[in-house]
Image (tube, rainbow, N blue to C red; front, side, top):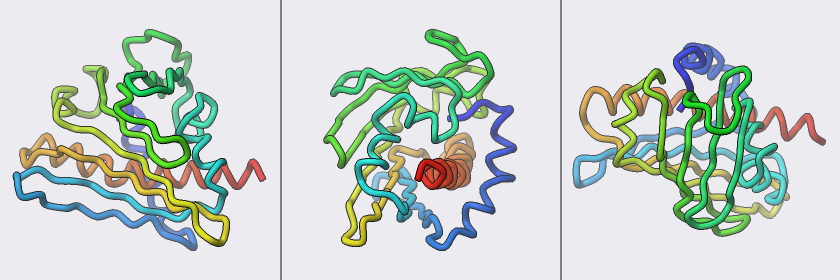
Length: 184
């Protein structure tokens, strides 16, 4: 859900993230109802608490790429983020997510509530979509991250959106990894 100006950079910069020791796995699941699900999985070289902080705090969310983030972390709460210079609360270029479910240090489920009309895709495509971020602590102190995007349609616009996030999530996970490594 990046603005159009960032879309090209995401695709161009996603290749280095794939070169990491633990690559990001991405797959598309064709569902029986005709919808598609996009799944990304990666092992993050950081403890669960650190990875959870990137999902559950304003500063942590910025590790994924936005310049602005505001949180109301609770079931029914919201996340507002902006990816442009000077982003602030209520900016019409920001993206707003509704928080569907929170299980601390395990799961965050969100749905796009508002996306700017000048973004990379038609905001109406988000109507039937939602995302789930799942964390699993590993015995070696690292964390498995799974990002599941549900509700992609079979139409051309949904296909463009799926391809956008297929590359964009790889880039965002790479940003997350770099920022967590830099914090050590």
